[in-house]
Length: 334
Image 1 (tube, rainbow, N blue to C red):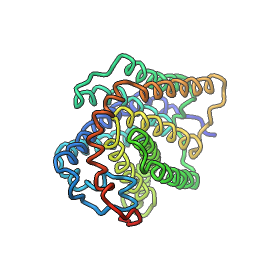
Image 2 (image 1 turned 30 degrees about the horizontal axis):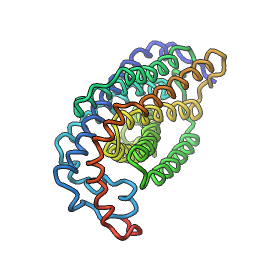
Image 3 (image 1 turned 90 degrees about the vertical axis):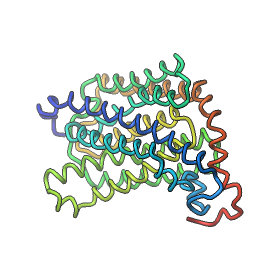
């Protein structure tokens, strides 16, 4: 396995700083787009959905109101924040590895908590902050041990393809499983599916950026990573919107904040030519980080703030699913 170059170590602070900025942008986007989803349904009511009811819209009810959603100014501002976050994330991935940058995105939970409270007029409780800092502490522990997050590596494209196919199958299974579930479970399952899509997007951003640098625009246009990136990004955004519309912002962001870096790390280690962490300190850091992430996620899932937000979201859920309850033909497809 190739050793990390001196340049790889010197650009780590740049990659970390950019990763944190991307996390802030994604948190702002999540807050704005969740609020936009509620506006789109509440303002126009459930009477005339934008798409016919079918298998896909039963699994992702927000699609019934997609035209109203994209015409909502708040959603557009959220989209701009998300676009800027993708650009910053791509720049961070140019300077650092997928396994280094993606775990930093879990810090968006720290930004999402106060941003979500602005719309709900309910400041997070102390236990919410403790859970959030447990998640961030897990990321800090993960990054603090040298070699746990490989700094650089060359992609093994067949393995990347295998990872992409596996992620797509798992995401599809999660969306199918989420159909008809209560809002909290539906939002969590869809959020995990979105996190898988965004994890693959991170890997594909790095491959596409390398194509642009090494092959130019023409070479990039004739290679597959750019097109796979477009598909994974669109699917991730679609699933993200559904998750935001279905449940608590903190719960949705938590599920994505755990799934995205975890899946990215696994792909970054297994599908890139890097040294797999194997020393006792590295394994201990991974285990400790995993424990903190689990404690933080469980703490947020059972938080009174999250439960209160879900209760406030009940009327919105009834409007969102009203066209489904009126449709007698579940076999009809979009």
